[in-house]
Length: 207
Image (cartoon, rainbow, N blue to C red):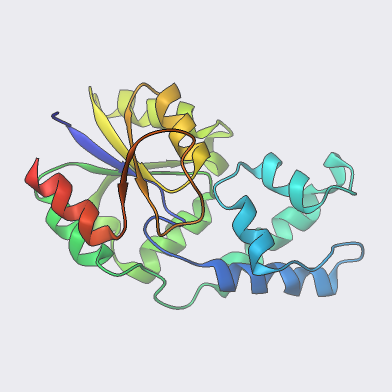
């Protein structure tokens, strides 16, 4: 198989911000009436979902039109809560090595400010040719993968992610999915698995 690009998910694939994101939600909950506190497991269960899906699950008792204000407050608090190095082992050196062989891209269901914070904290933005996210387009991940493909005139890409939603979106975009087992979820069907980012790097460097 030959790929002209590698496209990466962010949360659960390149880094793990589960604890600060949980803390940010609970800070908002302390200040906003009717917003329940959550556990890290509850936040993990919505990692990778779209905006609507995540807040419908976390705030099922609140009418959809009334979820937007706490959602935006959470997004602001979430970005400011990110202050450390949350990368999985091997990601920094792996991306640098992979970028010498492939164009690299990011497609996530997060907000643009979250992607910018990732780049600011890690300094890894220089390895990515392009990126897209749900918060910028309002489109599902499969559409955003296809958008990045068209925008960069790509023909065949591998998407590396950690959830069933990632696999479904990749299939919708007509690309090949690879799963990392150290992330937040399980695949929806058969696929190749990696147990560390170093395994990801070694595999694609050897192709």
